[in-house]
Length: 251
Length: 319
Image (cartoon, rainbow over all chains, first blue to last red):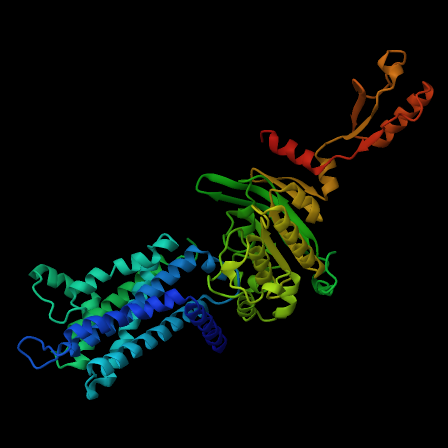
């Protein structure tokens, strides 16, 4: 057991080093959410949600926090595993006695590190630039929500990796499969509204809005997001089931 | 041997008498397609054994079964005394595998990657030693994606050797390489042999088999056609030794009868015969030459059967 953990840690270190060595990859992963945070945040600074005293940015910053988690866990892990599979790296790992658990554990651990770094960066910049800070009595809930979000979208990332058929399409497929949902979930626009009834119900069924809701609850008082937690748990279970069912070591 | 820096190691005494790989009546079908139809061969400890055959003969399938990636449809397979399909984990601690096509993590550096690979094994070889055996010391800090095809293949070898295995599988190690890259890959394989490793390699290149292998098995259409040393294989293929000499003018003009008991073909200036018993034929020929005062037979040449002829003959004929 300790050997497996040690091997997983070693693998995670290699993954992190490779991640930071690939400048465009790391830059894009971090720059994309942070750029949106600063640009759209600046446009919203000073305004309030209609009919409330809640500042737009108090809702917007946790929305981008959700976006950051999704980029780190879903897009990065999903496309990474697809590329590893397509390049035959997973196949090569199978020629060694390294336990599969140690290898996949290392990939997941590296994903968690990336997710922590990007959420800390998003949270800090959100706080410093727009004064958006979580409610003090909700910090535990915030941490728990971030963990749940990371686990949920990592399992969905592993699931999507098995339907990506080439290394070139990995990034585009991962982004295209969630960006439209993120937009109509209002992640980039705190005042977003006016969707037809059926569409807002559809949006509510996806985990993007659920994660944003849960995180927004930690920043601003909103109705307790019980349904959102159920939603995330179901998507986690579904994602994990597909990931395990469809997982292949070779393309 | 091209290397002087690596020390020779012997196989463990307890296993030196047995075979590293035993294959008995191996059968494999994919659906209704029969890919292997009863394959038998042994690989002895310390030898380089080559599975030679045209594309689609079943070489890679055989290797995948031996590596524990596929359970066979029938037959018995033992690798280092283990059943590969049932004990893949234990096998992979002791057998290094170089697959036909297999990628590297894009951003990893050469030495960094080998070092991580070493942690997967209970008794890894030293990093510097691995770099030296495959001649990659000078690119140890290069990112893998910047390596040439030949360098990548030698990195494959280093990763397969990282756990100091008793046995190494190489699936078509030089396919698609230019002559210089092939030469360096061969040198690396000879270094592996110098370490006392048992090597099972597949190839469809004759010169590769002839250059590297101690013994060869020709696999065609799911069966072993022939197995033995290069020379044995050629002889057992029923190929004859070729004896030729410059046609004496007396023979050409019909002043001398052709030799008895020899199927001699006079092709203008050259006379040629093929024989399964070179010594006997030579004795008859020389006696005939002395009898008719033809001297020493100018241009006399004896050519042993070559693997290439065997191989071409086997793979040209319909099964």
